[in-house]
Image (cartoon, rainbow, N blue to C red; front, side, top):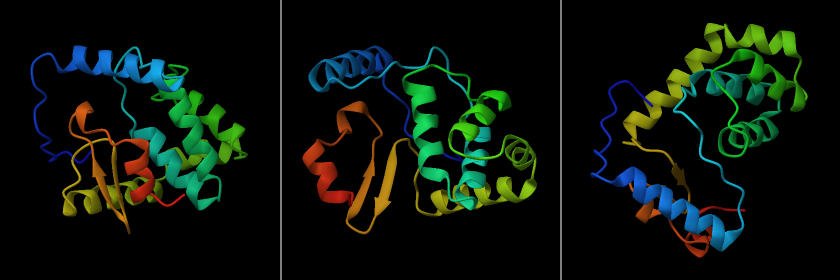
Length: 154
């Protein structure tokens, strides 16, 4: 998220309410979701995503990053963890590690942050597409599957 982002403050008790909501969602849908044990920076994973995109390997890399966070509680701040994920996505480990330190990919990420700021996207998750947008500031704002299908092209 851009350094100058100012998302709305979460109300008191939000964390407990979100956890309860997530547990009910898991029970209802059968999804495998395990919230991470700690908050971790995603910056390095995003830089890796820029490289994966440049190599045509973004989709699987992106999927594995979500699994690393929400299913496996892997430390995505660790370059070695990311390199392992990159290898699973079909990327060369050495080239991936070089890319994590290459300012070209960090600059691409910063361009995305600038675009997000210009479009007033201050929250995660957010989606902006041809058929509409979704910005979830509160877990109660999460759209239904039918609402998602109307906005996101599959």
